[in-house]
Amino acid sequence: MEILETINLTKKYGKGDTEVIALNSANISVEKGEFVAIIGPSGSGKSTMLHLLGGLERPTQGTVKIENQDIYKLSENELAKHRRKKIGFIFQQYNLIPVLNVRENIEMPLRLDKAKVDNKYIDEIINFLGLTERQNHLPNQLSGGQQQRVAIARALAAKPAIILADEPTGNLDTKTTEEVMDLLKVSIKNYNQTLIMITHNEKIAEKADRIISIVDGNIISIN
Ligand code: ADP
Ligand code: ADP
Image (cartoon, rainbow, N blue to C red):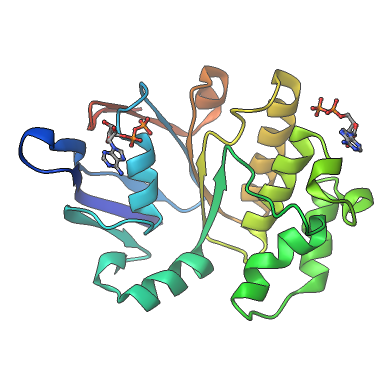
């Protein structure tokens, strides 16, 4: 079943002489439960693509459909709501709040949204990610790998259908990278989620169901 589709998705920055076509008429289709890796050189448009898929910025042309809904036909409020319900973001920087403990960081998006916190489910994710003993610790008391696992737990807290990840293991050593990737893969399987991940790591890309390769804003191959 298709969960996400882009139609001639295009983003330009600047005007005239300074115009940059960051993404040029991208057409992709992603199935529910798929793990898709996005690869390409620096400045090729990967982050732009991820931001557009997540509704973080508006395309210049074309659109994104998620579960058959054209997300750019939504109002700003509806788009923000869609983003919080359907999408979990994971970035290279963990963006944890230093004065909140692990559990509070994980629950933060739900509390901001005044959503009901499903304590049992949060316990389950914390346990699954091996953070049970750490849930009262502050971020600066954790290793890099642990902090990234907190960021993953936070992304999972609202049970999103789609996880968008921008180099989530970029700061981690090889062993921790493998651990984090294994957890993510089990998570998407357990919760029937779709994972779209930018990576420079060939070993990670090889494990994806498909690899989308972008150069100079153009998708040059989908394998
Ligand atoms: P990648 O993630 O592959 O490194 P990006 O999507 O960040 O690539 O960038 C694609 C192109 O768009 C680059 O040429 C970059 O300089 C340009 N770009 C990205 N964001 C902006 C912005 N906010 N303003 C102007 N140009 C931008
Ligand atoms: P990694 O190899 O994942 O970066 P570290 O070597 O940084 O891990 O940390 C190893 C262990 O020490 C981890 O269990 C981590 O929680 C703990 N630790 C790291 N930094 C701190 C800190 N500032 N305060 C308390 N515990 C820490």
